[in-house]
Image (tube, rainbow, N blue to C red):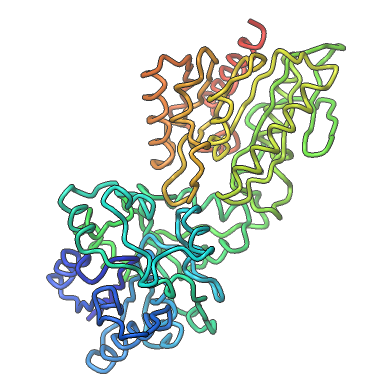
Length: 503
């Protein structure tokens, strides 16, 4: 028999598991929900400090009672904050746990408090500075739950119930660092990704391919993944589907990531799909210039990579084949092309990445070989949020803004509190700025949703948007295998950008 131990997240208690637990039980599993102190369990005593260790002890008590009563395999499920006490307990009872399930939760590390995983960056800063009531962090008002995760899929009744039953989160549970001995590393793991709230499997695979050290462990064969197309509370929005996923996870099912292969270049380092000749290139600071024939001044296209890209990634993006390929192609068509390295190393880095891009643009415009009044900006992938500044207040010299398979609204799990980096909202102020959008037909669902949201907003305000569709294209299609459709899309997109520079 499989024994599930379910640990709820911030502000919530055992009640959130009711429907999922009932379905698991109906399928023959044994199910225990953990009542954490102050969150559906016992109330804290006078003067008692409830911290992460308190909640770890709550989970340990259930594990120990189950280990005595049952000979089944224990699957420990932690949702949201609940993964922190779950991991802390599993580290001390590693031999008793058959699998740990991270249900739309982060990857807690030794010495790091749960506060680091709170999605709202501004809220993290407030709590670090001593915010919150003495009794704990007050639960969200009904319309404030999105600060903690996407409410996509929740019915009005479910949201009402979530709000009515929520309890203050003891501050110590968020501020006390998690302590792990390393024993838990031997326990198989499953991640359940809610794509209405954050990245799906394909995007996580891209992170593995980029070489981020903290992500490489996810390609271990003992780690599996599932996706649920819903928001952050799947036990309320998709209880039946969640029960099915948990049962499959307990049986060892799920998708396994492909580890980075040193003998084969990752997708982003494979050859560009067009055979473009070398061009003269000049490197100054974080910017490379690719020069066309003739003295100029020439129009210029500034090419901005996406991310986040790990700080230690080598080569850096301006040397990736996609960006060197576009730059050479653009220079061959008579415009200066510039590729830029910027510091988008985490989702909280958009501010300084925007500074890097703005400085690079001014450096390009200051070059005497560049026509300072004919500039295009071309953004890719996770660089999409950086377009918001330029959409909100397009300068007269900006003749075109292009985006390839972009993310055009911050995903809820990013914790980007700054409304500045929200192109869907900014496009209403774009005026007559021409926009070229290259849309991948096989885009990841979580990214495609932001593109459609952007296009809806653009139609509403009458923005000038030309869409270049790549029906069979995937995210990063330029290096994922050459096809005539993809080659044609690159030529059409570049032609559209250059046409607006010379109009």
